[in-house]
Image (cartoon, rainbow, N blue to C red; front, side, top):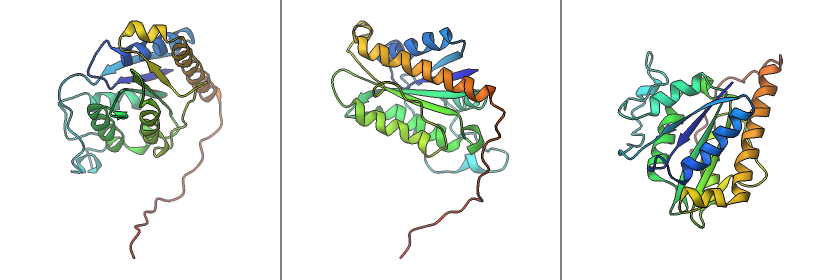
Amino acid sequence: MKVVLVNGSPNANGCTFTGLSIIKEQLAENGVDSVIFQVGKNPVIGCVSCRSCKQPGKTGKCAFDNDMVNTVGDALREADGIILGSPVHYASASGAATSFFDRLFYSLEPAAKRLKFGACIASCRRAGSVTTFDQLNKYFTISQMPVVSSCYWNTIHGFTPEDVYADEEGVRTMKILANNMAYLIKCKCQSNIEPPQEPPAVMTNFVR
């Protein structure tokens, strides 16, 4: 049992990382392994719609291989769930996190995501966390990934890591999220129920 955690903040040890670290520790207490990947400070290019990732022999691999997108994709293929983390920039996920997650979810083949558990956290000093939380959850709901919830929206507040730990309600929210993620993964792993069959793929364009 394993969960992939992605820190979409340029700060490797900042508030978003602290929130993910709380989750990682709580997952470990539940017997679930996890690993944190850092998006980092280097520029992250967005998807340019080259569709290289959809070509035979390249399926699931982004053409841009100078960051961690393909590495995280490989990790998710072997994992049971993923948790995305981002700071709040202008009431949205950071630009680097958005570019990173766009390419990650677009390039990965559907089978690498389908019916795996997804969750996200948003870190902010004061406001904008709920819109960021809403933005990040859409990656899961378009990918047939059940969304794991907590006792409140998965947000933490603070300007420093010390502030995050002082946000006791936020810390509790992170821990409950980790507990729920671990529980659902265990339920799935112990179940012998076959996943539902998908109807044939179809695309409908809205053309007058």
